Length: 67
Image 1 (cartoon, helix red, strand yellow):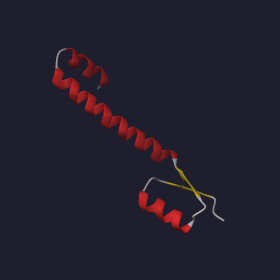
Image 2 (spheres, one colour):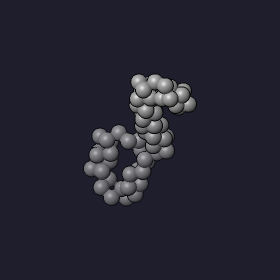
Image 3 (cartoon, helix red, strand yellow):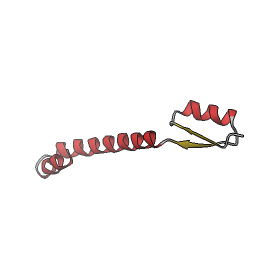
């Protein structure tokens, strides 16, 4: 009877929902999608900044722009 389940991205809950409601479609809520993207962007930005900081010179200027 359950068609949709809106939830976060916690894997054990997803597995549980699929076992209990095999025909239900899992929909991830917006908050957790945005949180995941924001975290991934922050990690990538930090990695780029660290590479630029080591290069010095022109890299220092780009480092400040990204920061």
